[in-house]
Length: 380
Image (cartoon, rainbow, N blue to C red; front, top):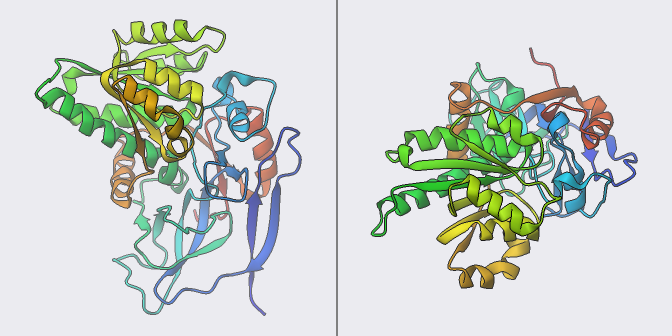
């Protein structure tokens, strides 16, 4: 008889927060000939709103007292009583794709790239990656595995493959454009980057941008501003005295918000890192741009909103650039930077996988500090 292991499915909680976590006993998967079986130790908590891997996937990241999940529910078609964060995505993009664990077994014909049984790894979210809410998963080869240094907790490593990696690739894209702005034929003496977002994803983007911009030869010419929601801005403002924070209070008229943003930034901005998910967020970002500027958006937002805004952007002499999640090379670099303490991760909280149902409930009520990470095995 085959050995059994646990597999968990987290579906959309819906407006009534009914039961949305389902646990099954499934056979322990066989080891692929060229791949490996992974013992999942930690996985970031997020859920599926629908059955497809498109823009319908929502994150259950939380920002504790400074945030709520209402925007996530709203963007997936569910409505709550507190709309302050409508249209903002925070943290993971795909369900169960934030996986950190250890190599349990290796296929007989596998090319391991120096990774051995028992090695600590984080999984790059390649196309077709299995959902990580299980005691064990298998990967077809070792190309998707990134070693994790002993000094980096696996619970932190589990936060890196989606939200942090997306923020990294967005910052990379912004930096390339900034170099052109500061070195091109119409070069500027100063340039401003606006980060639009909320919670952990905005904090990742801010910390990653601060790190890489400081390495740039133009670091003294790049200013960073953050547009966020309500009192959350006070938390982001503590990051650096050099970072300007503007509150996007939804009770103000759109024109007032745009004026408030450009005033705080010292004028129109050159690049917006927009992690919003709604037409309103993208429209507002476009209005904050200087001529020739650009808004960077995620793939799901680009797929949904680019057809609607492409002509408007052209008329305004600005552009909308779609940024994918990031490469495995970037993930390797990110793992090392976080392990060395050069980039500090946002707060996170760890819960036993058995408490997934309660974790979702608490996240929807903003009762959890930071990212929620589910623990499947204790390897300490």
